[in-house]
Length: 299
Ligand code: AMP
Image (cartoon, rainbow, N blue to C red):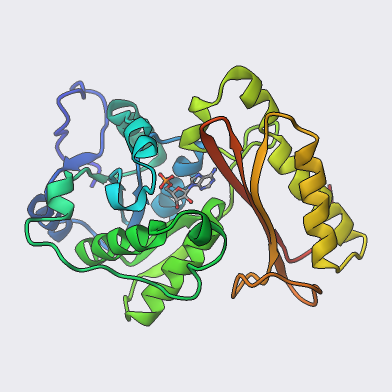
């Protein structure tokens, strides 16, 4: 797809941009001409190096990489969060091109949810705890839009970040349950040098909040350190994370978790792999982070 015409008004003649399509029909036409395998990277835009890592992975593994940029209204449980969500299409297209995207699907709300739309996809058990408990309706919005995107793209692979660990599990479950043939590929969390996980919401942190935000990583690493030294009591790891977060006055903890990574049920005793996760507010900005406990790391 390297020779695809540049359809973005912003793109200069020499600037490589992904081929932009804005409707279901235009996407179908672009995909009909695209070499397979096709990799899909669903995003809400405001792209950063985390997204770029997913796009680059898809580019390395597929003949065509399709990204979608769509701020999905039905997955926001706070209207203000939806309205304040950063929208940076021009910069997104530059970053996407540099990372290897060939086609960018940037639909309107009316294209994703056409008149008469009435189908929703819900995963029951995995969406109950953690983010599901904190954000009612969020995952139904996610699974509905991802089902639509997977249906439209008919991609061979779709790339999701471990940053949203519960989302990854929920999407995997949905794809399996509905017989969607697309392989769901998990990609590692990309972080700032100080440990803060990259997120489109980070730009909304004030300078003092930004300086305080690496406390999420510090709390995860404190619990990981105990686990690496042999601690297997889930409550103790949760308490360690809470204590670390409580030392940061700007951080308001929503939840910490030490759960079974397959079911997301809280663990009393850790007898196999586990997933540490948390949601923490800094003013109006809500950050999440997680750390899988599978093998010890040499640091
Ligand atoms: P979003 O635009 O926030 O919906 O994210 C789109 C995809 O990028 C999701 O699969 C996220 O998990 C992934 N993602 C977001 N932040 C990061 C990060 N820091 N590292 C890796 N993947 C990420």
